[in-house]
Image 1 (cartoon, rainbow, N blue to C red):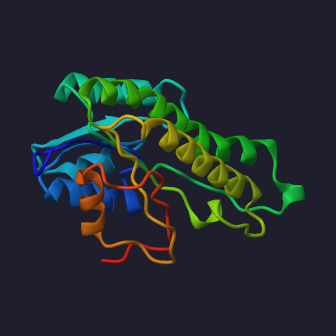
Image 2 (cartoon, rainbow, N blue to C red):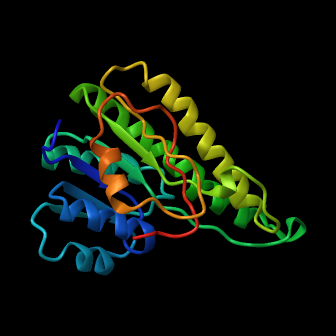
Image 3 (cartoon, rainbow, N blue to C red):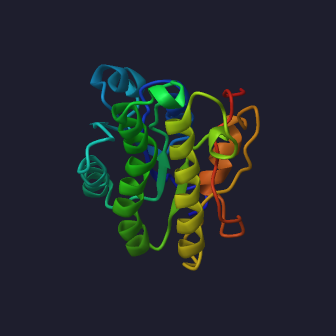
Length: 214
């Protein structure tokens, strides 16, 4: 792919880390589709960028991943990079963690990434090129009190990515991206290298840290 513009889908792009990621990639000239529940926030993000697409989607809905990927493929005739950022969490002691808290955390932090991976991989295989970045958390590597649902989901999504990476790395064109968890974010240029890097990268996961460091 070299320096050519990539076709990228970023979930949870209306604010925070997802917004920063999308902004950096838009500024780099890539074709970037952004998803979130808030159209207004997404429209504000992409104002002035002809290389963008807004997709209003609730990642917890089973069909939203398939529909989002389909829209990108139909518009740009393929998908090169998937960045799964959408996530959320609630704090509560274990005895006060309701089924609603548990189910919501699993839905957004684990099931939604699975749905996006499942939807994106076939088109990446067809295009013989693919990069997947999943924003996880240091909570997926260790335990913290009062966030049992969130921690379980993040441990789960790291396991999902590791398994998928082991499977998909067998495809010579497919490189799941790896960065070790840390307490601060990698600089934006590191992300740009990640999505455009060659096949010499290791399999694994890009994990979420405490803050974006510019």
